[in-house]
Amino acid sequence: MSERPVARASGLAVAFALDFAVACALALGALMLCGFAWAATHDLGSAANGGQRLTMPGPLAEVLSTVAALGAAAAGLLFWRCRPTPEEWRRSLAAARRPATWGTSALAAALLGVAVIAIGAVASGLGLQVEPGNDATLRALQRAHPALLWAFAVCLAPVYEEVLFRRVVFGRFERAGLPRTGLVVSAALFALAHGASGPGAAGPGASLVLWLVYATMGATFALVYRRCGTLWAAILAHALHNAVSLLLL
Image (cartoon, rainbow, N blue to C red; front, side, top):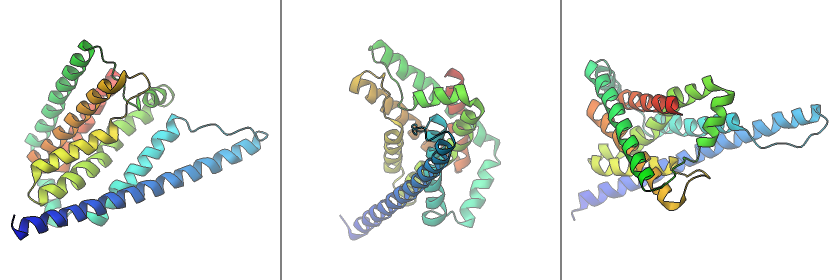
């Protein structure tokens, strides 16, 4: 192996490790701030109610903490570690103006929906009960705050997740000339971040199916990003998929 590929791989590994460390630090800091804020407000509330014992955070607090943690990591990495150049902004905006970009996003979301349904049907045929780890939280939030659930799942989550997994992770590999490796790595990390099974899931088989579903989603969004040349296309495909999932939920 020549020195140039070795140096490129070494530089990519260092940059990726730094990205990961920065993301973890920002997410942990945001979670700690959310925890302090929640504890402080509930301490005041418990004092006003005669010192009643604190309860665990509810679904709204869990979702807001997730938005704060991942949003902080995404924003920090985008503007600190992977800031787009003026030329990248220009190309992205030009791609966003093309009708074909939005048609590709819609088509990808539709095909992804078919793929997810097919995977679910096979899992059901095998007797596997697949339940995402956040299913109970989303259902509780849907009952209590449906508008907030839609804002989270359709408007917020697609933005910060696409920044993290496509712009930062996939983009690192793509700019290094390794788009296929980037697709696999970003899809795997996306699946690991989402793939925890709920308490009603039936063992490791269900977890594997869930991981496959999210990996398929991550790979699809990466292909849309690369095909269209703008992160907005991947964000739209992600938002459309989440909207349909909420309607089914």
